[in-house]
Length: 596
Image (cartoon, rainbow, N blue to C red):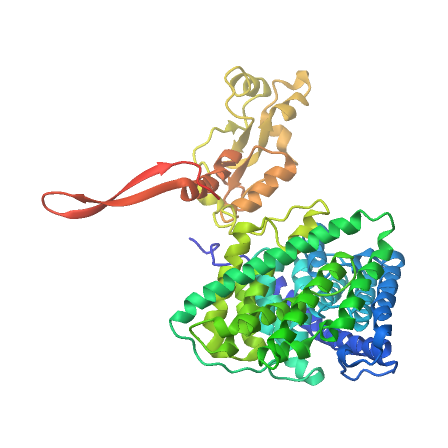
């Protein structure tokens, strides 16, 4: 009887999409390896004047004052690529991916797949204080989208493949497949369905297994700390509040700086070069603030740096990152957030009770990421996978959750969605199961309905059903219980007056009426009504016999939403009601507009 009802709505196309996602995951891993080699190549070219992809930090340069010019040269090249190549390469990648998903039918161009890693590698290789994850998320997403465009797929299926490619690239860069899946769930998919979750999970798994072949295996920043005591919960909450405030300050400063760039009387093509001036100055005084800075993050987590050095790195990194990113150059935000969060943690670690000082750079790092990205679970798991430190998992989650709560309360939008909002698009980050999706036609349909006998004449139908006492816009026309079609005023007005004595059934011989089946979801039928401009459709037993079972109307389809409304707005308080013989709980209810 309920064979059509299940936990999920899916079909065999899911297997096809998952297979394509596996290929996309492997390609994104190759792209990530290429991007990292490209960053090293340009780092060596700009700072050491050698043609090599060996791993050297820009902080090791011996250029002296010439280091001021290197970021400016890189900024000029990035500006030219954006101006004459593709403007989509500007920014840190994740907002652009979200915009393509929600407003671009998940379509990306081959230009983006080629120019984004090139521009990012030049920007980072010339000293830009960015990470590689944003560019590879954009590049991996472009790969997934391009692969999807070779197949006959819907926009929703392309979205799954775009996101699968994006987070597979993140997996390849950091070796964090579970966190990458959570990034997709909390930031990119805007749904939680098998059609999207399975391809994403498979792509990340493929990238995780492929990564050791190209990029090495193991945690990026191995760490082992001792478990925290009960006081660690309080300290974790404090860390979350501080990291939340840091997220607010960085995000606010970034967009105020971007507003200043927009006021400049020159073309935006020159902005990256102007922003790079600040990068050059900061890099001259604190070279370790340049580039991706994975080595600096490792030193911060291991507490290898003096407090004065840490303060200098964090301050310089924050300033040049805000200015450079606001200028519209190309680079990611995760690595800088990790560095700044870990730096703050290293500074305050000696004053945090409830655990050894070594744990706090890691906790602050995760909290800063969770607050800025508004993805607390991803941030906690990401920090865990980066270090392999299972003892820190609980404080990571607590701090990231508090930072997330702070930014939700005090920030209207995140660093990701603010950029999209400035382009005229609003993004609502909350989502849940559509009540129309989880209810079916047979639950809401009207089973007793007025019908028109197929033998009735047109004149009789006009008089009895469409006269002064008309109740409905359309009526089902039946012959011995079998649906022939729907009669409405528009259809009757098209019948010539001389055929008023003809039976209404003769006008439905070849018609194929819009119908609903009992096992269809309310969402499917609601879409059918909207597309065809209908108020109600007949419900039939099956598509062959067309035996009429009832009617489903727009009014019927509102019923699931009414139940959700009651759940959201009907407030109940349970109090004890004493009787002479027993004690029981009785609810009192009050309906009102609850704060959302």
